Each structure stands twice: as structure tokens, then as C-alpha cells.
Image (cartoon, rainbow, N blue to C red; front, side):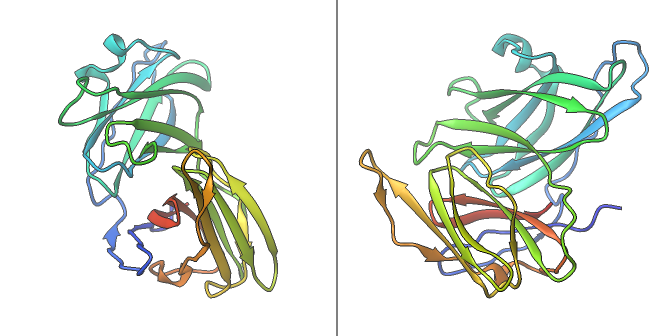
Amino acid sequence: MMKPCWCFTLGLGIALTVSACGGSGGSDNNATGSNGQLDKQAKLTFVNTARDQVDAFVKNGADATSEDLFTQTHLKAGPVSHESHREYTHRWGGSSALDISIGIWDSKYQLEEEPAQTNTQLNSGENWWVIAWLNGETTNSFQVTSLRRSHNEVPSDQYQFRVFSNTDIRIDYESATASGATNVSAGKVSSPILMAGCNDQFEVSATKGEAGTGLVPQQLNLCGIPDLQPGDAYLLITSDDEILYAVQE
């Protein structure tokens, strides 16, 4: 049984809003299997950190054209509100691996603004994050990134964090069990970071502008995560030095 997960926003003042996992509703639509028997499946969790509501589309096969992908037939979740997530189970038949095209568009403006699209290869039984985000501060610059959810075993007395960023950042961390620094490029996710406690040092600094001006590192309050439990893993989605969204892996 999957453990509960939480979603929230954390500004630098650590203002907190909590909602139950899947609070925006769920979708469990089927894909067409090649042999008519839909005996393979993978879970996609769409996370929206863009400012506006988005719709999510999934079509079997890589590199689908916009005309083929963005149709009512392939609409799998939407509208997904800002700072929320929606789960969807994709089913298919035949081979255990399946290439898919994933698309995101603004629920209001749709194809009037440039939609985002990516390809992903699913394997039966996998769980994936599909993150809709904005490239910098540009309102209509939608991006979409898919990444497999972490299933690492976490020591029972530690916490695991991965950080996804919509801008280039540097993470500095120090705890009783680990210390180091890592750079994370926009649209990428960091390697797992183990921390001994939520009060340990976990600082994020971003770079802005053409000259890559560094911002002053900001301490993130990991203790603000609701019901933070040792032995669990969490995905933090950030913009500059602010947590936009956090959810248990």
C-alpha cells in the first residue's frame, strides 16, 4: 500500500498550505492495447507548478504531432490546478515497455500558447512524476518533465530528499550523517540527499540573469513538511530558492 503524501507551498516565510494527496481528483483511463488485453500498467502523477490550470495528454508512441496528441481522446487529466497534482493509470497490452508522448497545455488558452511535450518509455509496474513548470518568469513558457519516482530504501533514522528545479540552483547541505554540495540544472532533479534531521543545514541558492548572478543562499525549513517521517523520501520542486511544491515519493 502506498503511503500517504502531502502537497504544500513554502515561501521564504514558510507559509504552509496542506491538502490531502490526490485532492484535485483522479483519473484512471485506459490506453488501447496492441492485443486488446490491457494487462500492463504504469502510474503517472501529474504535478502542476505553473501559474494556471493545465490539461495533460498521453498518447501511445513517441514524437506524436500536436494534431494527434492534443485531442479529447488523449486527455487524461484536467484541469489540474496550480500547486496540485492528479494521478492517472496508463494501461496497455503487448510488450512490457511502451513509448508514449506526453503533452501539457494551458487549460484556458490551449493551443493559443505554445504547449509542452515530451517522450517517455514506461515499463509495467513503474510510477512516474510528470511535472508541468514554467521556464523562468515567462508566463506562457510551459515545460514538462517526466521522471521516475524514487523507490530507494531509506534508513529508518534518516530522511531522503530529491530537488527538482525550474532554474539553475546550487544545494549545500550538512548533517550528522552527510554533507556536500550539488548543482541542479533547470528541468532536472538532484540525486537523492540523505539528512539526519529536518533541522540540519539545507540551503539553496539560485543564479539569475545572463551573467548568472548568484543569490544569497536561503535555508529551507524542512521541518515545515507536514508529518515528516524518518525512513521516508520526498520530492521538493523549487523555483529559485523557494519550494513551490513538496510530495512524498
